[in-house]
Every structure is written in C-alpha cells, then in structure tokens.
Amino acid sequence: MVRAIILAAGIGSRLGNPRPKPLTKLSTGELIMGRQVESLQQVVSVDDILVVVGFKKDLIMEEFSELTYVFNNVYDRTNTSKSLLKAMRKVRSDDVIWLNGDVVFDPKVLARVVQAKTSCMAVNTASVAEEEVKYTVATDGSINQVSKIVMNALGESVGINKIVSSDIPLFIEMLERCEDDDYFERGIEFAIENGLKIYPVDVSDVLCIEVDFTEDLEKANQELGEA
Image (tube, rainbow, N blue to C red; front, side):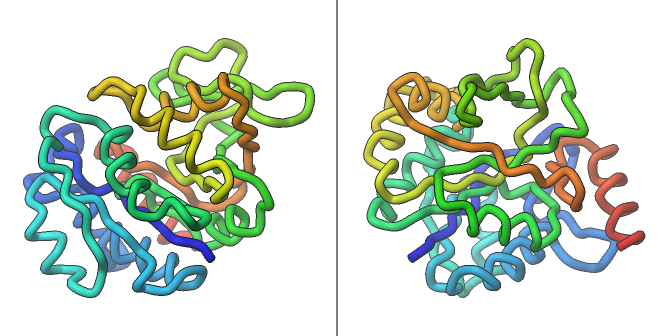
C-alpha cells in the first residue's frame, strides 16, 4: 500500500503571493495543489492523501475538503523536516510518497517513483542550480550526498520522493535529529549516513518544476502551454 504526503504548511514568501503557494493558479486554470491531487489519485486513493498545513490553513482545507490534514502549529518557525516528521508519524506502516506543495509536474513523474522498488528521489539531471538541493551517487548507484553545497553534483532534487515502509523507522529517527530550520533533505542526509539506500529517479525529460519564484511559475506555465 502507498500513502502520499503533501507538504503545504509554508508561508512561501518568495513568490510574493498572499495566499498559500499551493493555491497558486496555473495558466491551465488549475491550482498547483489541485493538479497534484489529481495526479496523485492515479496512484493512491484520495483517502490516502495526507496534507501538512500551517500558513492560512483554512484556505487549503476549504478548497480540498475531501483530504486528510495534519497541522504544523509551528509552521512559522520550522521547515519541511518538521512538517514531514509530523505526517510520517501517522503513516509509518506503508510506503510513502511525499512532495512539496509547490511542485508542478507531469503525472509520469509519480508513475516512475511508484514503480521504483526502493526508496528514491526524483531528480533533474539537466540542471544543477546553485540554490537547489543537489546530489552525487556511490558506486552502487545510490545517493551518497544530498544538500545545497554538494560539489560536482550530478543533478538536483525536484521535491518528490518515496520511502519504502522498511526504511521508515530509520527515517523518522533521522527527521527527529533535524534542527527546526532544516529541510527534509537533511533527514535524508542523516539517514544515508546511517545506512539508508535511496536511489535517484531521473525525470529530466518531463515537466517537473518547483515554484519558488515568479520566474519558476512563468516557466511552468510556458511548459504547460506547450504540452
């Protein structure tokens, strides 16, 4: 069984939108999170989608009333590691896909992540931007470094990941070690150091853009228009 977690608690101030970033409207007329939920329902039941909310949570909950929610009451002083920890504690017996609530992606991304037999991270090997979370791999193909300061990176994380049920206890323990302001990738980094095998899944050939800035939104809309 597979469960899904959407991380939607953040303020998202860099986009300059007064509403939660997952409620940003795309050129197709869809909301970012609406598109995510529709895609997720191709691989999981709507009852198995868990959303972590915080900033202006009522707006998200009213828009998507059929979903299940976890409230990060300290969203204004914690980062995605702590939002993910709150949700992971609820789903520790199943494989879990999790994603940031600001990722615009083709449903093929989820299909590839689900088909992977191991814990995995969707990556873009066509881009290695300085401010993004980057990675390198070991000789067995598993990720051995993941952070914003990785040297000689092979690509960057796109904010969609899966952890198989057998790896969850270790991952939860490592998320608990994270500082309040850490991204969840810090938990992955700790877990790798303690034996977790997580493999890259290349999605460079399909739409998958994390919308942090206006330019990202413009790029996503352009690619949606060309699809």
